Amino acid sequence: MQKIPLPLAEPDMVLEKPVTRENGMILVGQGTVLTESLIARLKNMGIASVVVQGHPLDLDTGGGGTSMGRRGERLEHLFRHVDQDPFMHGIRLFLNDYFTRKGALEGMAPQADDGREG
Image (cartoon, rainbow, N blue to C red; front, side):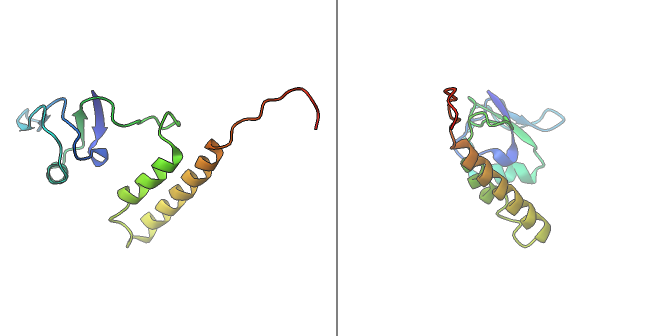
């Protein structure tokens, strides 16, 4: 079970817990399979997060298991509606550059030091 921010929810994820309003009214039941339209409706209702089955996302901000390249690809999806905003466009470019550079470093394996001088 994993609580994730709604913007990271994807179709075919399954709700582990029902989505409720603050007053406890159930909006979507446990076991429901998320779809694009359902995610959009929840967003319009102001739902911030959902609890899904399993651990579909690595939310560790360290490097934990999600490659930097994958994070860079995710940027395109997350910033898809803000291309007309110069500030947000700049943030996307900055993050894309960061993930690209960090991904290049991930690919470099540390060299073993055998004690010999070059």
